[in-house]
Image (cartoon, rainbow, N blue to C red; front, side, top):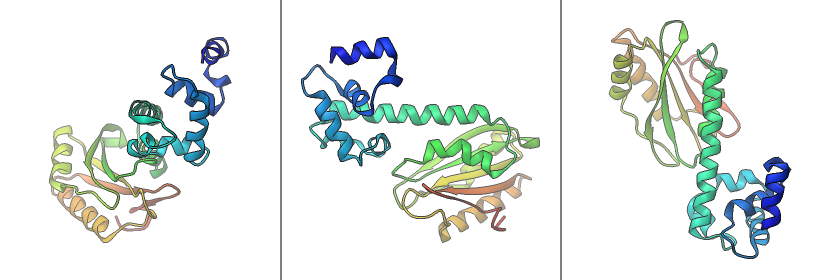
Length: 216
């Protein structure tokens, strides 16, 4: 592995192949790191994206990776997601269209195997005040307390808010529970002159806007 470390120092990480990057990331001094990295990549569909989307339990059982190496891979993938999300958040200071919100949250939610629901709190002129994860659930759904969503808006003195959640399996089409949640939050927020601007559902290949479909 010394030759890969030398290459990394001389030419940078961009000069390494996917297999070499995985070999360096999972190397613990044992022989066969390149072969293990190649087997891992193939087992995950032949792409780094497949590796990054794999859960810890699966990775540790793949190609002799084991728990410690799998943990490094999962942590690295999460770091990458957070870096992309932070980069998108920096680029968007205020919300003009639903596409701004999709651009902010897609890196954060795209590869999750479970549902998460976030609230984006806005001031006047659509300036972003805060973004808060308000619930985390399973593959098929998550439970959101509409009272906590509105409570946080009052604490922040927000005048508007946007809901965002992902559908890790299936399409971006809203369920009846999604529609009920949207109505409840819109009604609860309106009692305090806070406006629910939109509820966006993100899937791997699409997104759904409640406002864009005339439901808000």
